[in-house]
Image (cartoon, rainbow, N blue to C red; front, side, top):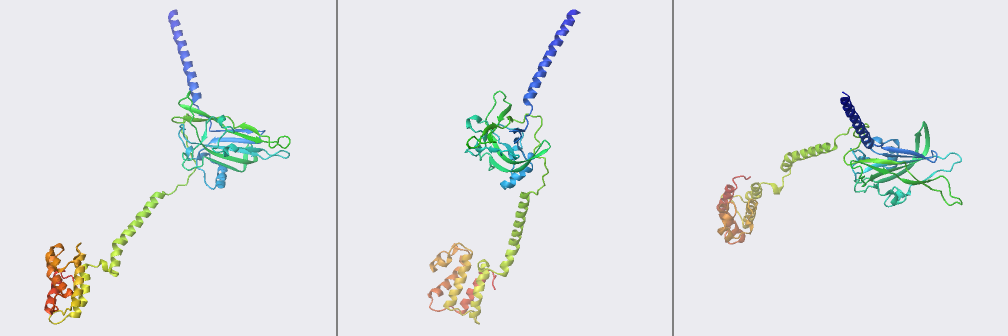
Length: 394
């Protein structure tokens, strides 16, 4: 019985030790993965200078940001701040604000120096080596046209501790990148961030200029992750009201389709109507054009026996007939000689039917026949032309 109780006590003690070890391990893991705050602040020189640093997204914008936008003439968008996790190399928007409280009576105004931000390239520390390249300003190519660094100074009111402080505020909007990795924490990277700056509240003895005091911004680290934020919840992003806008692309597509439809209807209906009202000679049916040219000649030469064609009339009739033939074939029949007409009548459409008429008119044009065409012969030629053109004449 005593041996059994001893064994039971041993296993209970062992279980208690394991449970405590697991609990400590879980607490340590929870402490390691607990999300860090997204902002940090601090006072300097007895509440004469207040510094506030924050990771930015659109939901953090306030009235001062809108005032800065008006000064810059454009709205700042924190596109890179709406994130699920901060993978290494990603662009991180950080906003740094320096509130210089107005000097009281008898105090010398506080002076702020952040000139290292205006260096080329800009840097966060007074001495480049001190930063160790923890954070660098993003390349303009990586931020798709946005400014990696903007600095604006304006008047502002700082509410703090139930009071409002009149001050001069300098806002620094940064788009930063880091290429550091902590080998001891492969899943959760916490990269320290700080900025060095100088301020002065007095001058050196002998008018030697301001007595600058180099200091750092409050200690802070930014959570980086290979996959997602270490916190248990996703970032909700911008929850402010946004007015719904019409889809512009769909509107433009509808306008283009409407214009295309109107143009198509005008082309199908209006163009033929315009052709009928204002006929173009080049678009008239070749047979209609032929008889428009022949009818005046026939009316002028009409006699009882037929048509009294002179050589000039034969020349006009031949030209009209050749225009008609060439309109329906790729062969230049106008360049044919009488021998060509006799030897190659099948080289153009209805050539055998035209052969006799063309040879007769061609001989009159060239003066190869001593006598002009008789009225009866001219009537035969006109009748042949009517038959070939299927009577689509006058």
